[in-house]
Length: 510
Image (cartoon, rainbow, N blue to C red; front, side, top):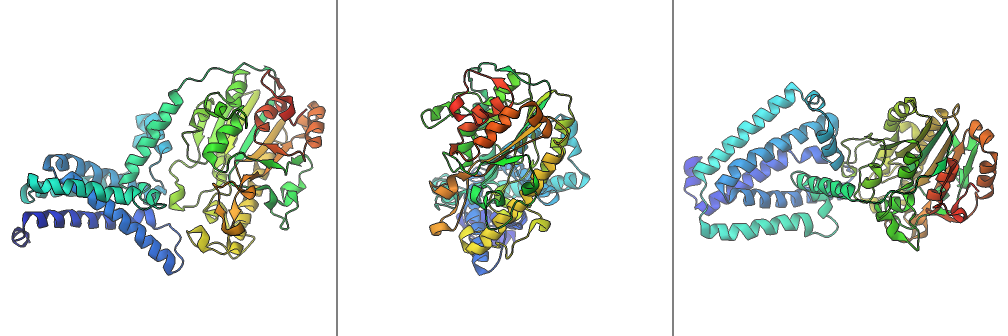
């Protein structure tokens, strides 16, 4: 084999060397990130093959870039292969991928927690991967030569191939950036960007006065749930049978968001930002900070990935816990909001007279089938294509409505845990969703159904006894046309807090 390769020109040996490593990477590591992608029919198979080939174009370019210098290759290639081996292991065993929150957990855990995640099998795989990678590096050092003249050609070619893979195909670059090896760069850079956001200085807000010695306030931030698909609001399907049985629940069917994307709507929802002052979302602190100053124990329980625009508010809380620590929407794994329940129970058990708990749910985000259990699949046939527009409107609607049936069950679990407390639960979705209307799907556009957000308020009997005027005002304001702006002002009043920042025109509890 060595003699056969030696008979070729050095430039061809170099290309065969890089090509062989690229194919090995595509067969050893890439399947771990593609096996859960929905595949129903030749179109999905073709698209999956296209993404795999596009990824290999980028891997070929990256490998070539490293291999141009044997010194760089001898150091970088073994590190890359060991890292990919570790992530492939966790992908198969824990259904986890690298995300900014995973990096955060690795850095904030003490060494005993990180060691506990190891296993003898993982250690053996890492040693084997290191041995193979070192052998490849030695082969490159001894048998593959690259002259400086050819290096001048390979360098721009390798950069071009990486660019084509990660940015050269509009609408598909993110598919490559979320896969190894490019996901390492993508997630580390996102993590560092989020750290910079958290480190920025925002002036403290005035401390509210008043309050209640014993009050639990829960805010459930929904995802992609539009108001007109709730049975509570007269939808043709009874998607909320459990909430319909709650006498102390008030639905607000006419709430809308200013934006139809989470990273824009969530900062607007949590701060004093409004149509006249949108900049406040990125300059001021949230009501979380104000309620913490007023003596509330605050917790953010997340079943979503963190984002640059709202990670600052997550860090305002006393407690920040991720339910889905290694999940990624691009992987299409089962991703259920019931994973929040043990965290919710733990937070409720902590000795705190005043509590504010925010649950950031995955709710009705695409891929819908990943966000409900078989028991919640009341409507069929289900969506079965990874590309949203490849499904029929009926399939999309069925799967979407099943996410609501599942959320209805989850809301019941939360409320049952609050019944004996003086408690209030506010549900508010970040935005709505298009389900094929006029050829539109998902969210991100300025359309009515995408800006329509589901919202309701539940209160316990003890809360109603203590604050009958607030409950009366809530019922009186139930049908008002509101924007997300109302939340900042209303949740402070609902918590019996007074602040000069509260705009009474936006307060649904007055």
